[in-house]
Amino acid sequence: MDMDAIGAVLLAILGGAIRVGTPFLFVSLGECLTEKSGRINLGLEGVLVFSAMSAFGVAYWSGSAWLGVLAGSASGALLALLHGLACSMKRVNDIAMGIGVMMLGIGLAFYLGKPLIQPQAPTLGSLPLGNWSDSPQVRAALDINALFPIGVLLALLMAWAFANTRWGMLVRMVGDSSDAARALGTSVTWVRTLATTVGGAIAGLGGASLSLYYPGSWNEGLSSGQGLIAVALVIFARWRPMACLWAALLFGGAGALGPALQSVGVTGYYYLFNAVPYVMTLVILVVTCAPQRVLRGAPSELGVQR
Image (tube, rainbow, N blue to C red; front, top):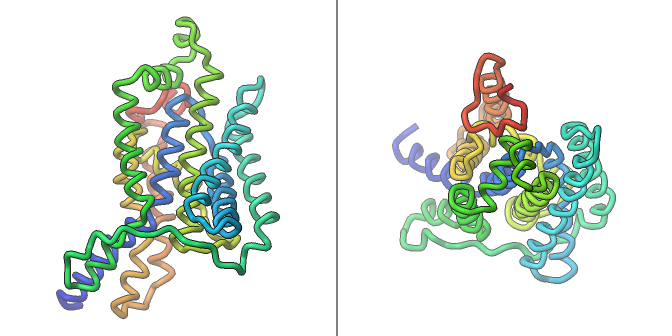
């Protein structure tokens, strides 16, 4: 492979990292907020699929992609609210309830989304940040999903809020010690339910990105497990919003590796390269979740470092 081909592959991976990583970014930020409050939401796969269907349906019927984005966020918030309220009840396990919400979201999306498989809805625009270059590869790589800058701003805002605001302090306190939070008069149930709901709304933006930008259509295999991968991604990022951004780009770049190599004629082992994000997820879980390891930054109420 010559230098021009290597450069083309690197540019394709860069562009793919942003395209493929945008849903990862929103879902991981949503899960980061939820887990910071001491709750796990394994239902994010259902949230992602249901919000993708809702966003596509509303965009198709209204003719506005941005109304679809709002619908996707609202749908994610509703499913997450259900999870938050149910987990606030006695003897309800976060993990079991999350699996139930995942199945509910996927089932509703598949049932309600049947009429949406063939139609084409309006798609989100892109930001042509590479127009300064004469190279088609550079322009293609820097043709940015319009939702991606919103995700970057959300990561910055969350990082700042956790460190500098009363709300961020309450979320971290509830996640680290619910007894201490109750002693100070804080409603643990209210904080966790609100954090879970807002986290679902953020994750819903990832679903909207899937159906309205990349790949820009609705079908039943749209997510490919990205909601579940995001849980591992949050662990990898050590529950830090800005680290979630870089981790999402890393996973996005891994997902874009196969198509990038195919674009320069490397067609062998295509499906093996497509499996890289899933292999990375397994490696992260094995390495970081070993019993003898202490996870820095993990909210104590999650029980992952007890």
